[in-house]
Length: 115
Length: 112
Image (cartoon, rainbow over all chains, first blue to last red; front, side, top):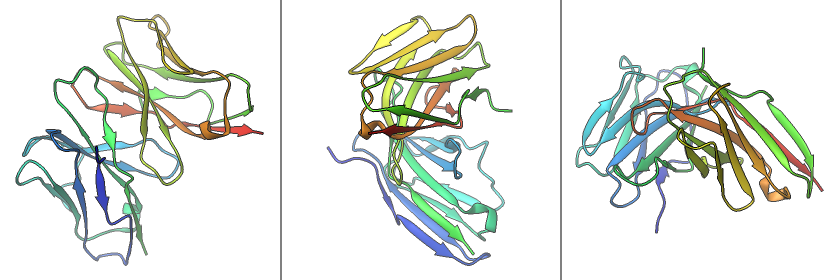
């Protein structure tokens, strides 16, 4: 079974430029998450989708961050414009609602460096 | 501040020894806990979970202990191997499915 796929793995941009990250969750997983992970820290939730609906986006900085999951499968996270402090790893995860465990399956992340 | 934290940021053990990684949480309403392992350049990987109606759960070479009285969680790794070297995070679910709150992590280094 294929895992959560993210792209790009690495991205280097100058501040004020836009950037987008893509995530393909595990097939059949209806819940999708975007997490932010700063160096040496644990992941922090940005947004959670149940199918195509964003059910928790309280931690998403909406002035510059946006996300979508139009068909309830793949998702895109966008930052526009990027700031120096946005340098971090952006992790996507998916899970199956109603599964026996609350396990989240993570992708390998997209590492963003803003210069 | 964070409701999930770790007592030690780094832990160094000898290969073959047992490792114990600790975690404190502050929300008594949390009812589900997970330990994740994160290797360099990779996403977190599930190790083991435990629900609040249990105080111990065992997996392959790993055991999680939950002490609700003092809000403490620990991960025990038996016969630690070089492949166990990673950062370990505990995470708690504060009642809303899937909204895991992660702690800062403990870096485990295994000396050959």
